[in-house]
Image (tube, rainbow, N blue to C red; front, side, top):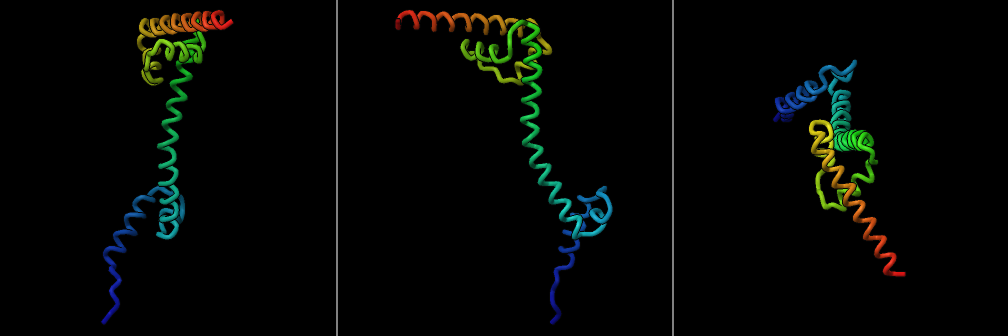
Length: 132
């Protein structure tokens, strides 16, 4: 009896890989062996880039927040510290959006952060004098 090669499935699998490799340069779009390797590398890069994109977005939000904070006369790190002291839990994405689209609300947040920082400094000062 003849050897069964499962040719239809093999052909389908190879055609699928070559379809993914469409547009690649040279042999990588024409020959299965090279196309398979190129597609696997492309998928690895795409997987890593999907994760890297999240960090890139966060960096963008922080840059925008820093610029908006400095326009208001406070640094980004002090602003975030003040929000934490005021127990305001907004993520950087929302804060960045507020800084761009709703300046009045953002200035209110800055005011609250400054007030919380002042209270925190006062509490530390009284704790130091009570200790001494």
